[in-house]
Length: 361
Image (cartoon, rainbow, N blue to C red):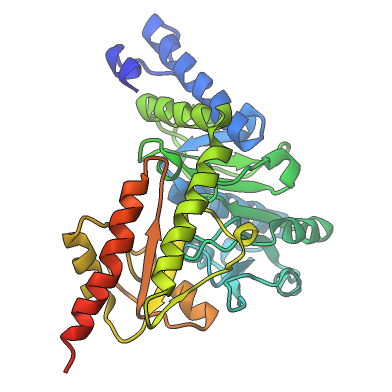
């Protein structure tokens, strides 16, 4: 990113020296991201993040489906699991949609999702891994069933990319969304992967950037950083980072559930969830107080929906799972999390909870 900032700000769409240098940086990054995600570079569209990628996927699938069916976009139908990110749930609401429930671990039944498909269904959503409890979803079964029915599938892989291996071309999905900052790259950059041969109309129009699939001058500096982070992971660190993260989360989880009134949410099996997330419920204590207590001790945590950063509303994910959605605590680890950070967290959590319980009448 520093190297990109050190050059004149060239437009990648121009043929002068500065423009060609910018184009080279963008295309190198495209190859780096594509290599990590297992797709052809030409299958990828750079966006401003997973939220835009999701909106683009839904817009394109709905309008392409509407044209094929000869109906208005609002008359199309989308299938969306109840535990999807708010960006997916909001985008799915542009037309008719069916919400698919989950079990107590946050996992959908692929047969139930497929039964929700009707004559006007143009898109089915399925996460790769949940953004709050980490539960991995049966993506392959959903994709296979949708292929048989001729329905497009969008996979939200924002939380999973950089944490578990992804091979988009082998997965068979039609659309897949990722975000740079989730895997250690800069914020404000993401990508939408589009299956080879699939043509969907763009959400952003007004220019021919990204092969006329996403208008607007590319963020060369951010894209360069996104590519660099993917190259680091693709160079062999993904598996090592995932193993460290899983060990750190298991230590956090063991100490957390040892506290009276603390329960773990999601799939407890290591192979059934993402390696870097922990979500627990704490009986009889409001989450705001826990967050403030942890923050005073240098622990950044979250409660409620992980996609509602400016609110502490009950988590729709936990509500769909049938567990207490009002008193949750979400902790995550990243590539730079140290054992000392875990030491601090496991020491702070029981202290905070004990202090707060001592304040009760």
